[in-house]
Image 1 (cartoon, rainbow over the protein chains, first blue to last red):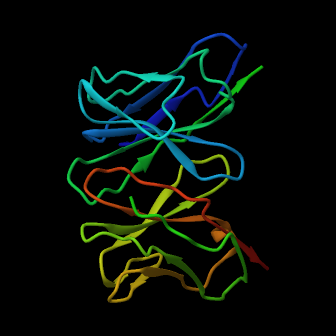
Image 2: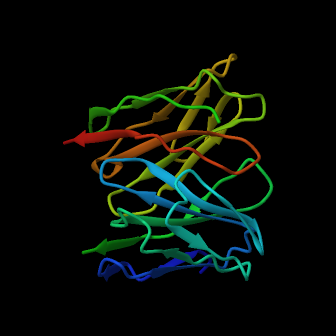
Length: 113
Length: 109
């Protein structure tokens, strides 16, 4: 089955710890994205990558870091510098030829206490 | 990037047709209009996309007037399972999409 996987579905961390969220896709898509969603709100773009070894900041990149060493993988690290890390994190991918239809993973709910 | 405005919430009954209108006054020439559906604690799911006039697929229709400053998502004969948040997005070839708050559709029996 082709698709996007995110793991784990639920993640709990103590304040001050860095945590890495996994995102893998087997759709052969060039572009990948990370979004954050807070309760009752729309999605906000954290980082996106249109090609391997290259990525750009989205609207709320502070306190987050990413890497894109392989086409299939786009892990997101939530660092201790992120002031309010508790949220629902969604990864997506799309082809590089516009207009873009983005395919979303199931999401990871991160809780930091 | 063009900003979109859509109603915060809508109510409907099973079997009715639902029309959700989105305004995007600053839409650019290269922008397409895309609608997504999201259920609680799940990732959004693509519904339909269009550039102008009318687009129809197996789940919805999208109506776009000539000036493209608004668009209307039409869901025929909704069921309880259509209760969800619907997002209207406008995007260009950069791939960056801006999600607003969306429209929460509540379908009642």
